[in-house]
Length: 142
Image 1: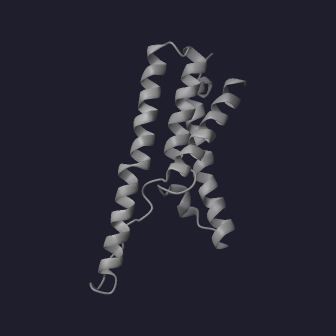
Image 2: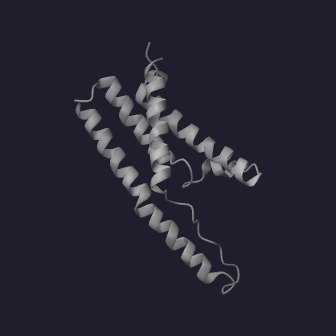
Image 3: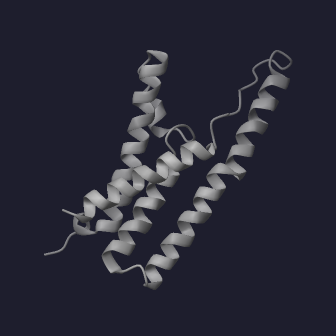
């Protein structure tokens, strides 16, 4: 009997996302000497969980149903758009938030700082994509 746990593309995507998000907690712990579980639920940072999730999904779809399939084409284009957005539009939003935070700091009382960690650098996207590839290959072998 097949269950959702036997859906290799789904499991690849979920596991890649989980590892990427957990890595953010560990990286923060190492760099800042501070355990902050909220990093698990945060967007932005190293590695890109957007990239790891969609790359794991796309590669696993290709390995499962074939790289010539319509399903793989959809997953691959979806992955490209998500990674482009993560390193382009969302990175610009991060930069704008930093500028606004710097501008309003001390000028407005009770100013709630904007989240500056929304997008990803190209390096974070590539590392996330590599993580997704590794997870998809491991999941497809079991």
